[in-house]
Amino acid sequence: MTRIRILPLGVALAAAALVWALPATAHQTHATVKTINVTAYDIGFKLSSKTAPGGLIIFKVKNTGHLQHDFKISSKKTKLLGPGKSATLRITLKKGSFKYLCTVPGHAAAGMKGVFKVT
Image 1 (cartoon, rainbow, N blue to C red):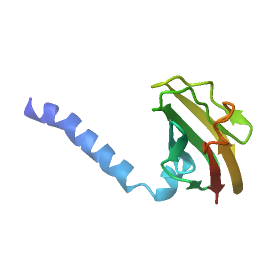
Image 2: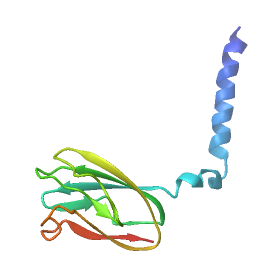
Image 3: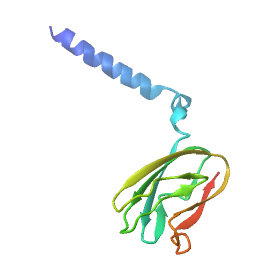
Image 4: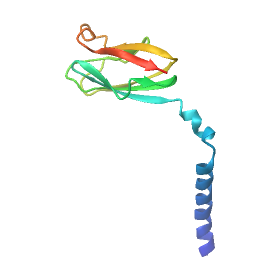
């Protein structure tokens, strides 16, 4: 009986070791996705990184301010976010520089803008 109970554990450990030992190329399909956390506040943005490699980039935007804000980059824009609200933009970008901003009138002029670089 003891052998039967140990066998599934041994199979699970062997499978885990095999997955760990796979070449790095087997895991690279997810390496092209980059997540950037964007904090919108009154009146500015804080990005977890202002650069990323080309490919799919996910911008997770959270409004920590007291005013409504949105986030626009490369013709994609979140909905208007009230205080404490969040939204996600999924966008594929190639190498270059991309301006981002809040489209609420007056906010970009007050400092809610910047440049994001794709390498």
